[in-house]
Length: 447
Image (cartoon, rainbow, N blue to C red; front, side, top):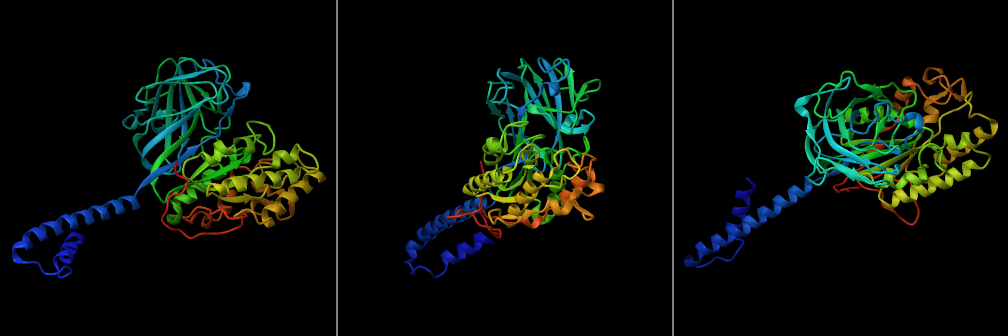
């Protein structure tokens, strides 16, 4: 229909009449011009339907503590299968691996990916190997990271994947993520092509794996959640994929207006904002875990309770300074930043009148300071109405600091999904200010 309409326009009386003996040549010329116009329209439509890389799953690497190192027989010359759940779907993937905190190289001899069938099994029909610059294996230097070649894979939203690595030599100090909340499966020797890992040694940790990106339509984008053990899933169920960011990811996928939004969980158990507790501080890892992630449009910060619980009077002001720094850094990259209030802690080992005063100072600033682009009030959502300094009993693991599975669900449900419906990036001005933009066409945060 479009072609016929364009031809009618060109062959109608928009040009001065030509002599009869020129009309055939003129019509041929007009058809060439019309074809060029159609080509331009097609290119414009292709641009409008373009894709970009967006993170669909991530975890924050750290130096694995000795008590969380791989169990016997170890990783060297053996095969590890690790399970994860993505948020966003697509048809082309790439995967990042990290040896950032190790002092010696690590060799990945084979890396396979497949749909998980549960309990260490895979769907063999979905299995495919990854390549690294065309090779089946790669050696990652100490302190470095690598990315696989892009590869086709029919990824569905919320799909559980199994990543199977047959290792060569590995260092004694391992880069990984201890708080996986999922079971990994370790077998001796080269078992990369095996569908069933029956008899494997089990360990509830991740090693070496870092991030999966997906080629997604241009409107797609990711929200990074920066946090500590609460975001990492302490109190959620092992292999249940019900950390509060998981609950948020599920709700985003179920809502048509936000089904293009991925969630990247960058929580580390025992982590601090200001200094090195467990893992690099939030300030130290901010570039890696937030700014360098693919397709990020939003950031949620829920971190600071470990600084307060281990700190002294005045730590609240230092946290506010750190939040301000992170907000400005994110805004400069077009990322909206939402502040999440710190949960109640009365009855926990962190509680004291001094620490409570610092928590209140931080929460008051998050709510009223004016720098965050929005507020997610977890304090209000999970505090006990009968004693607002403590967690709701039904949401408490019993340590009076971490939410249980019910608490994680309540946190995921407390997030207003309208925070993630805007399509434009944050536009920096002379100062940061709260704003909300309606969707427009445009690519944000693509790598």
